[in-house]
Amino acid sequence: MQDLSPFHRTAMMLLRHIGLDAPQPAADQHTFMLTIDSRYSLSLAVIDETDWYLSANTGELPHITQNNELLQKVLKLNTLTQLSGQPVISLNEKNEWVIWSRLSLNGTEDSHIIELFEYILKSADYLLDLH
Image (cartoon, rainbow, N blue to C red):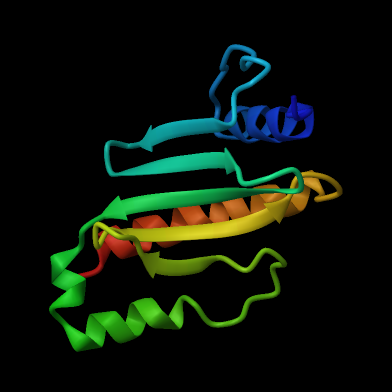
């Protein structure tokens, strides 16, 4: 069985960062999912032995996909940042907008993870508030 303790430690740190006091995860728990302010879902999940991802799924946003100017604003969010684990905005197979980042299970500083986490949450709020 894969040692998920680095992932669990990171997930619990992020949950505490946003003020949630969650119970200890099961030893084989590979995924954490939350709904943020009834607006979007946040997922933290193990990809393989070395990586995990953090994503915010805002669902379908027809007001963006039907407007070229808004679509350009969204795509500008994909420009290069100073963050390693560069967050990316994409469409999934259901045409739902997803902001995600792939991270290493080991060696990533908590401060960096928190910075990425906050960037993804702000980007999800931005997408949902575009008109």
